[in-house]
Image 1 (cartoon, helix red, strand yellow):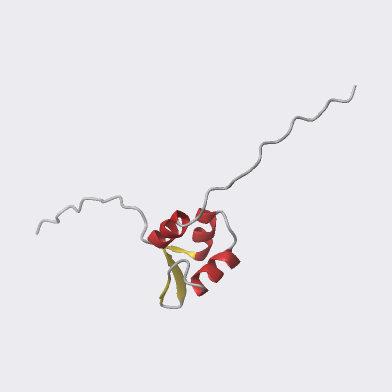
Image 2 (cartoon, rainbow, N blue to C red):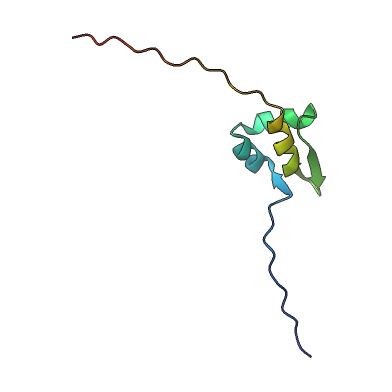
Length: 79
């Protein structure tokens, strides 16, 4: 009996854990839980584990506005 080789497929993740979602967003875990609670991102349960739908992170980021930051003024040098 021959064993057929299975081709390995590289694909981006569909779900990630809370710590990974926080790291991807550059925010804390508390923010991720709050964003799930308010519907900003989608959280799912797998057994007892809370997971985040990665595409919902992308959707959330797409709703953010550009930051408007004033340029720093030149400081006078004191001789």
